[in-house]
Image (tube, rainbow, N blue to C red; front, side):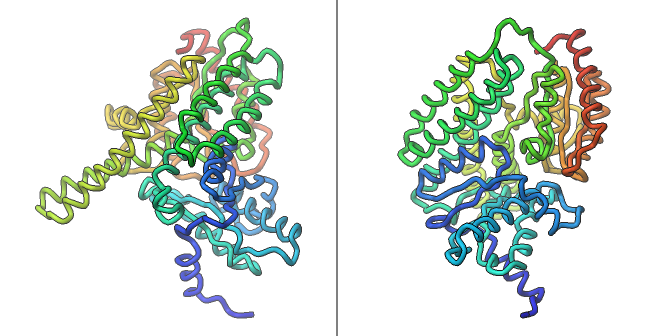
Length: 450
């Protein structure tokens, strides 16, 4: 067997992880948010990319086989997803299996979060398996607000980005519609069935209209969906305690990784609302605006004219992107709220002000802790009856969130709980959630809800 050197590994990371054109490939999308992943796949298909959302969590045993247990749990889950998919494709196609026909989609983030290393580690594991070294990993980075350079043809990039962002907002809307109607459904199970059908309709709508620049038709389909959802609510059921969910984006969003925590909360009498995916996308763009502004000030101070021009360009580019995102998000939420009272999203600038008010934390530190701490404070001040922080076991940003948010919630007398997940089933976890819900109900009886 040919010896694999460290140089070979570095070469693989630079040559087979990057921004590759996804045209003509089967693009494999890991499931994080179930609805959002399927809607995004619909957008890719509209632009001629054969995108598939991979079956998730069934390959967890494979992910654990090739990890030590020290990795962030989402790394293990997504590794298992891609390994199981490839194993099944090899069995299905036999000699016709060609790994070069596939491209694995795994974005990344910069900073101290281990998310930035997932695709590197996945690359090393794929390279250790016969033939799978030819499966390239297509990536985007939070470092440039998930620019699509290299993945999508330049002439389609702007249209794709608009449709993709709309798919993220629409996915958030369908999630929030589910959390709004399921605790009050007229008949058990009809809310889940309705949302499954709504996801299929919206995926089809995005697949049909995205590349035709017909976003208004997609919005019309979303409005019709929301109207139907309102009919599921039984108005005789009284309002329930309102719980805000914050934490690490993958585990709090991936139902199987968090063992469907929101459903458990609902079983014990809650109406829960999770932080959105759109919030993270807006944050990455906002952060680039913030960094470009800092660079512009420094370059002006030092009179570096070439750098001033570049930082000004970056500032204007990301500011326009953020303006568009806010405008589109506000437009969609306003339309939907004509039919049903779902929660709107936070503006990232407001969340930064929440942290700055008492010097609680800083966006300079970065990571999801910025959003989780500020969101917990904002929701508590708005009268939410409890806050839950969901995250992978050993997650650094979420443990940072816990160390700051927990004492703050105690001062505000708002029930708070940390729940970490690593794939194990802990007998005391549900008892802890039940106790948390008892405390939240007492808060609800005393203070009401927003």
